[in-house]
Image 1 (tube, rainbow, N blue to C red):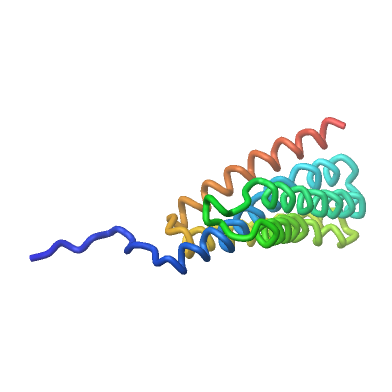
Image 2: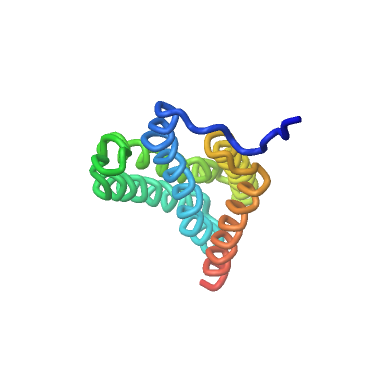
Amino acid sequence: MTIPTLTRPPVRRDERSFLLQRAQPAMTGLIDGSLSTLAPVFAVAVATRQPHYAFFAGLATAIGAGVSMAFSEGLSDTGDLTGRGNPYLRGSITGAGTFLGGVLHTLPFLIPAYHAALAAALATIAFELVTLAWIRWRFFSTGFVRSFVSIAMGGAIIASISAALGAVS
């Protein structure tokens, strides 16, 4: 009698290339954009109680972070030794993911009512966290709950610190 294994079967070469060259840069960008842009958006939102200001802070941060991450990823590795593929394509994917991750929870601050904008932004962040956990589960064989808790802890730490900074001002 054979005992079934609980390990993932070996990754095929084309699947490995997709993971290294497309999925991993996208995931890096989405996580970075979703988490790193929380601080300025929520600090400005709480400090000013002006959704319009929070929107521009978030938009500027998402653009800056996207460009920064695109260059960081594109310049960090030529792809020749690691097999990670074309650095310009990886950089573009990472930058676009970072921008998308940052701008999603910024868009609710287009709502002029402060409390409604804040509630919509928090709901958007919950959606982002679930999506990130699903992507990690789907492509990287990481447990969904473990992924969700890990990403949510990072987001909660960042949002709490930035909201506290906003409240101090």
